[in-house]
Amino acid sequence: MTSSIDIPAGNIEVGIEFLADQDYSPGTGGIIRIAIDGRTVGEGRTIPGRFSASETLDVGCDLGGPVSTSYDSPHRFTGAIDWVKIEITSAPPSTATP
Image (cartoon, rainbow, N blue to C red; front, side):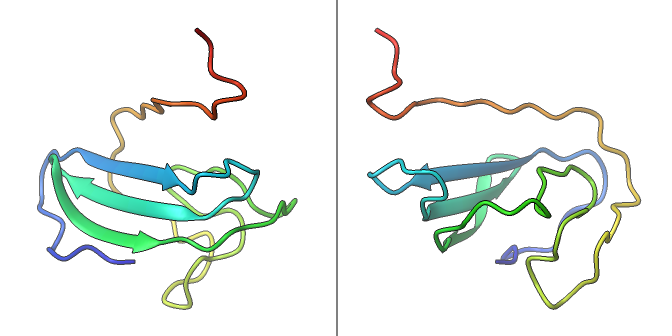
């Protein structure tokens, strides 16, 4: 997935939203959206995944296997990342708290 716009220079906020398929099983597929400064600039469907010891949750580089043939790992970001916020806004019904 790529952005529909060029990433602007300067300070920006990049957001990712993942809407899981309804079964909530580990590795489930879903819809992923990319936003720049609150504007959706990319959207696509993910494929269900499997656990892999070589895949990691990385910020600023890709230490696992590349998700695209358009780059080689670790493909480090050379800019500055001021902060990262991970927010889980909903949980599967079986784990949701009242």
